[in-house]
Image (tube, rainbow, N blue to C red):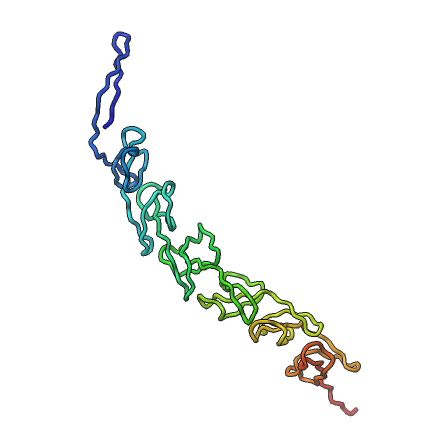
Amino acid sequence: MIRVFTCLILFGHILISTSTQCLNEPTSCNVNGLNGTCMNTTSNACSGEYVAGHCPGPMDYECCLPQTTCNVNGLNGTCMNTTSSPCSGEYVTGHCPGPQDYECCLPQQTCNVSGLSGTCMNTTSNVCSGYYLAGYCPGPMDYECCVPKQTCNVNGLSGTCMNTTSNVCSGQYVAGYCPGPLDYECCLPKQTCNVNGTSGTCMNTSLCLGESVAGYCPGPSNYQCCLPQPISCNVNGTSGTCMNTSLCSGESVPGYCPGPSNYQCCLPTEAPCTEQ
């Protein structure tokens, strides 16, 4: 019910008369293609969302839009006003009729990646404390599974599980010690090693450009001390190179190289003498 005040000027006097105009309730309204009902915000509860500026009458007479469901790539949600309604999950634009701040609220979803539990989140608007993994959540393309950061242990050496395709490991990746997809591996920190006074770096033997020496690094069997190459040696005036005896094509002489017993001075094969 709206009371309308009418001012009449008669012989220099202002007369105020009142009349009552009754709007046909309920009054329909439309907000960008979404039909609603005009209601008094102070005395009526809206089952959906109130939107101002689309109804005749006083300022507290607004358009009540009904609660509308939405679907984003197979995931059901509810259209809500982003400025006045908190979403328990994630807001996604472009899937609801009505004003621009009327978006689809997707419920919070859990996800599981090869036994590793996580939470589906919007990658563009949320920071994941662990790592995002695509393909495990319904909804839009930027709605991915956030798995928490996991620690790992490889034969007594602690590391962190990381996605090998999107993260750089400061040390060495070792497969088979982390739950999750195949590219989710244990990142072992960079370790130094020392073989009888010669400094090296612990790494996978396949990546060592020098000489890999076993027994000086924690971790798997192929995680060995990589000594720089070449390490020169000298046996009674003959120069050689320290290396594993199995790799020496000449003569291996022990006692002139740091490292284990099979790490010896490799002297070149003497050229055969030729008669002049």
